[in-house]
Amino acid sequence: MTNAKFVDLKQHTSFMTIKSSSQNSNQDKPKLQKFLADVGLCSRRIGESWIKDEKVTVNGKLAILGMRVSPFEDMVKVNGKVVRGKVPVSITLAVNKPKGYTCSNHDDHAERLIFELLPQRFNGTRLFCAGRLDLDSEGLVIITNDGGLAHRLTHPSQQIRKKYQVEIKEPLSREHLPLMIQGIEDEGEFLRIDEIRSKAKSPIGETRLEVILGHGKKREIRRVFGHFRYQIRKLRRISIGGLQLHKIPLGSFRELNSKEIDLLFPR
Image 1 (cartoon, helix red, strand yellow):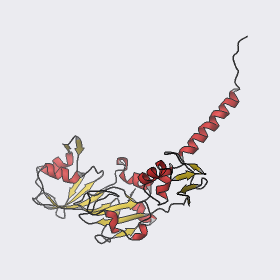
Image 2 (cartoon, rainbow, N blue to C red):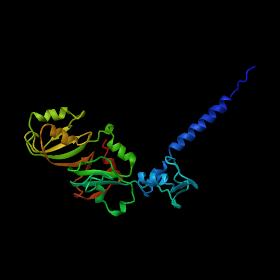
Image 3 (cartoon, rainbow, N blue to C red):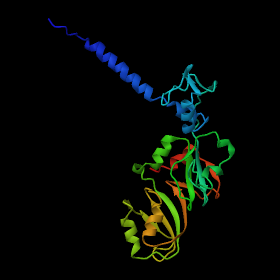
Image 4 (cartoon, rainbow, N blue to C red):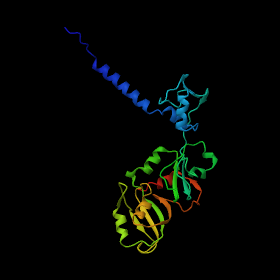
């Protein structure tokens, strides 16, 4: 006889299933620093510093950095004051960004941030840009607190078509038009323009153009035109998907309803 132990396979399987289910359930809970940010109390970075400085407790015990909490079951306190979980209200804004504003929540080198265009009632909401425009560009930018929506808008697989008004200093040449459509290599990246149009029958010889992208790498339009030595005088995004900019004044915004959000993803 050996000293081997016989395990009840059914009990063992049941135990593994319960353990696996528990692990999956725990992964669904937000990390503590994210919870503090989601309720509008601070940024994630500040939340992390509070946890490290032992200012945060969970169910009466000192919090540990990276731990996960259940917003409506665990008792979270900061400096002894209870932090209540709240069901986040989805907010999505269409902003007509002027030149000179940076699309970022924090930038020590920026003179003005796009969020400064919003009224104070949004100060307690963790908003972020779902896609950006560079400092010298203007036009339509989507700002939201909906992470899923932002992911859909920015993921390359969606191929959401964005339309831009581009004004260049020198007329577009016949030689360069097909090369821009075919694409170029720049700093190790492949860049291309999907379509170039104008109000005339052909964009060739024109300085005011309509450019369409179904993707959007950093400063892609400027880099493609710059590759062929064109100087861009003005770049303005006028639509994302089926959502148009024209009714939003420069420097203003509009809160989008569900039908307008659907327009961002034309079928």
